[in-house]
Length: 45
Image: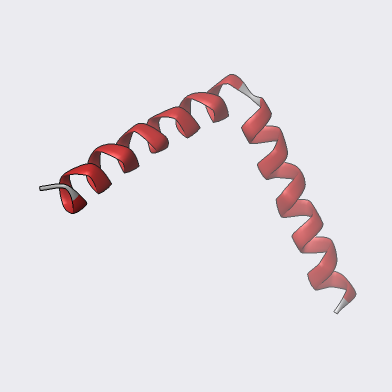
């Protein structure tokens, strides 16, 4: 159980670092744009 928790903490740490980095920011923007475009076409056709 403890090891599982440690693994989750480790994952979260990497995720935070990635989001803080410029690449993470770019990826976030790209995903948001792509999702908006896809959802827009899907829902508001």
